[in-house]
Image (cartoon, rainbow, N blue to C red):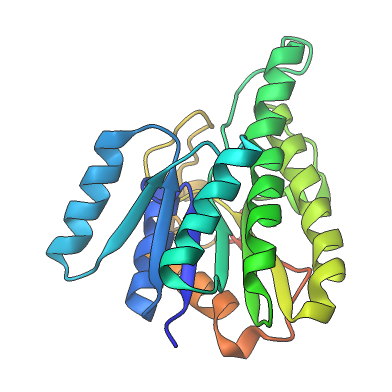
Length: 240
């Protein structure tokens, strides 16, 4: 039976890469996006030109009712949900002391609450297993390292790493694995985060679309059934 996948933030940037990787793998992919209609249409058209069909749904994952209704709609049309990938999450540069309460709340809602809402909406639809949940971190968040330029973003992703480990333990008896990908500098243009030059990376190369696809294929495939509660560091050795 064809795997049905939900990709939150799946119509642009790394999320768009994830959606394509899952489509190539043979999954039926439903990409949830917040409000960029142009990016959603572009993703659908580009993938259609490659012979791939991407389903898109506009919903705010920080709205519990909205993402729950979207997940029910997808399950109603396609049956059981097998994969959830959380790619969305706003970033912000600036020091902690220059950040107000609204900044903290925005990053927490976008990077943590959105994942929690998507998990609560999707896990009941993974009944019977196996299921795969993957969330994206920034590199270094899994060790709660200090960040100079993106401290609030790093803190939000560190919370997501801890959340994911606890969730992995909670869902293991149900045959659902929970893992994270700690993503370093990609060859996409930097957006609300500092740009990293290739020369600063031990491998001398940015993370590519192919690199992300390989990680997604492994963590959603049958070979990773005993891999849960882990963080795959995909960074070209950036943190070394």
